[in-house]
Each structure stands twice: as C-alpha cells, then as structure tokens.
Length: 314
Image (cartoon, rainbow, N blue to C red):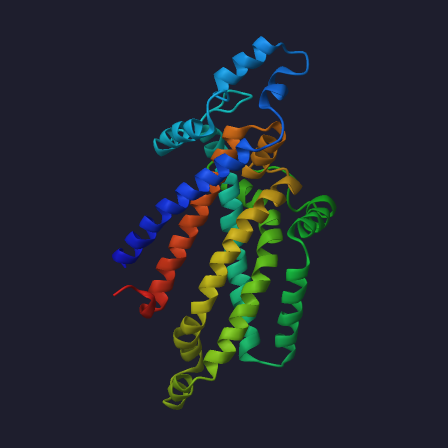
C-alpha cells in the first residue's frame, strides 16, 4: 500500500505543473486589463504604467509564470489585485465552509445511495425496486440548485426549521453548524445519491447471482452476514470509482449551492475574482481545488486497494 501511495503522489507532480501552467496561461488571455478596473476610465498613462509595474504585468509571460511557480512551491499564491489580501489567507478563510458542505453531502449521498441500492437489489422488480429506481431518476433529473431553492422555500421560509441563508462554523457552534449545513447538504447529497443507488443496485444484483454467494447460503450462513460481509464488499468495488467522480461533482456543485444559501465559501470568492479579473485569486482558487480533487482521487485509490487486493501494486 505504501508503494501505491508513493506512485500516486509522484504522478501528481507533473499533473499539478500542467494544471498550473494552463491556469496561468488562460488567465493571462482574459480580455481586458486589470488596471482598468483598478484605476477607472480617467487614469493617465503614467498611472497605468505604475500599476502594471506594481502587479508585474509589464514582464514577459514565461518570466511571470516562473516567478509565480517559485512562490507557489513555497506556499505563496500571490496577493489580490484589489484588496492586497494574500490569496492563501483568503482561500484558507473560505475553504472550511466549502469542504464542510462537500463532506456533509458525501455522507448523505453514501447513506441514502447505499441504503436505496441495497434495498432495491435484494427485492428486484418489487415495489421497493421500482420506487428506488423512480427516486434515482428524479434525483438525477433535478438540478441541485433548484432542489436547494425548493428545500429553502419549504423548510426555511414556510416551516422555519432551518435558516435560509448563512453558515455557522463548527468550532463556533456545532448545533448551529448542523442547522446551517443541513439544507444545502441535502440539496447536493440527494441528487448525488441517485447515481450511487443505481450503481449499488446494479452491482449487488450481479454479485448476489454469483456461485460463492449461493454456496455460502447453502452452507447455512445467515443471509444478513452473506449480504453485508461478502456480497456488499465486492459490490462496492465499482461503486468506489463512481463515488470518487461524484465527490468532484459535489465540489463543483457546492460552488453553486453556496450562492443559493448565501454561504461565504470558495464559490462566492471565485465569482468575485472572475468579475474583477483578480488573476492571482483565480489562479490560487483553481490550484487549491485541483489539489483537493487530487487528494480525493488518492483516497479513492487507497480505498480501492483495501477493498480489492488485486489493485495493489506487486
């Protein structure tokens, strides 16, 4: 397992380099001049040159990229063009809300998806199977931001069970955190659980028809033990791959759902950076999100190796 982790970590380095170069290149190609947004329309040429020199925009592209990469390796992602805030500090301040929302959504999607998928697989062609399939179809068809608006209208505005907007950090109030994160996590998690339920149902139906499952039942082992100790473990192998992709989808969806519930996470920071053409902020946010996605993929490879010994390197 240690060799697997080492191989994946080494493979991340060139990928990070490629992503950083592409991000830096695309932000450099953005239309307009950040100096226009900083100075306005009535600035003089001397003021424009001064701002370009201060921001380093007067230097060649490759030189700017190399300098930025050197600082990024040391943990310095630059400073915002507009408020002189360090990019790393701004991201560190906003990332807990986005990560909390994503993790809560993952937990909901796993619990709901596994439960619905297993229940449907154990009783194929029954009303439970049809209900789970119908629910999965509806869950995949409804956009998560629309589902979030619906949940906020019912449970926040009408019933007033949960707050409609805002985010409470866990360290400040665990109950407040749970209350503020419930509706957006449900908006994300329930839609993602539909894909997991479909995959679990398909994998479990196939595994339950295998000879070793029938042999275990014939030997007198309890049905519950055979299902949850043997069949479900093997059925989870393809599910782990789907889950890793869904975590990436959840992370992207969280950036949109944050706006619905007015959560000050990475999503609002990214939108503001794009509107202002705050190039260092955009580059820093993209790089941090890519690193999170790569960390999720690494955890997926580790989990896949634990479930399926054949996937481990020799």
